[in-house]
Structures are given as C-alpha cells and as structure tokens.
Image 1 (cartoon, one colour):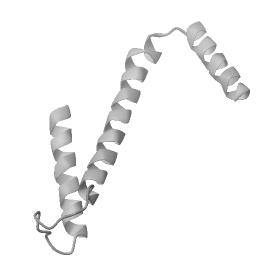
Image 2 (cartoon, rainbow, N blue to C red; image 1 turned 60 degrees about the vertical axis):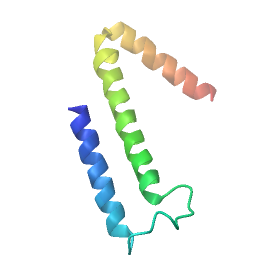
Image 3 (cartoon, one colour; image 1 turned 135 degrees about the vertical axis):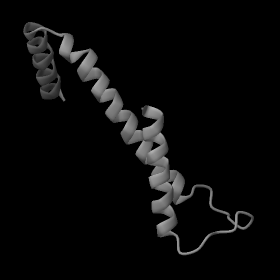
Image 4 (cartoon, rainbow, N blue to C red; image 1 turned 135 degrees about the horizontal axis):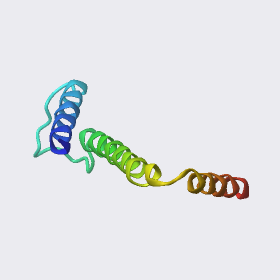
Length: 84
C-alpha cells in the first residue's frame, strides 16, 4: 500500500510541475542544480514520512500505555514545555 501511495504522489507531483512550467526544458541546457519538481517531491515525501511516523508512534507506543503512564508522559511534556 505504501508503494502505491508513493507512486500516486510522484505522479501527482509530476503533473503539478508540468502544469506550472510553461514549456519543456532541454536537459542539455538546464543549468539549475535543483528543480521545482525535486523540491516539491522532497516536501511531499517528507510530509508522508512524518505522518507515517506519527501514526506509528500513536498506534504502537501511545495506545499501549495505561492511563497512569499516559498521565506521567503528559506531565513530563508540560514540565519540559514550561522549562523552555
């Protein structure tokens, strides 16, 4: 499933970038180091990875804690936030 999501994401990014560029560029004359397509792909993949890691942490770590452990974690996070 993850592979399909990445494939659809890359196709969507490619279509968006093709829609934004007024004309196709010749690869031989391109002097830019980083294109808009690569930046959009990196941003999209970063969001996808961060979301996946967040879901993993919620499903496999947070949901396995009991109420007392959750209260300790929340208290530690509030204390840490106040210290900053």
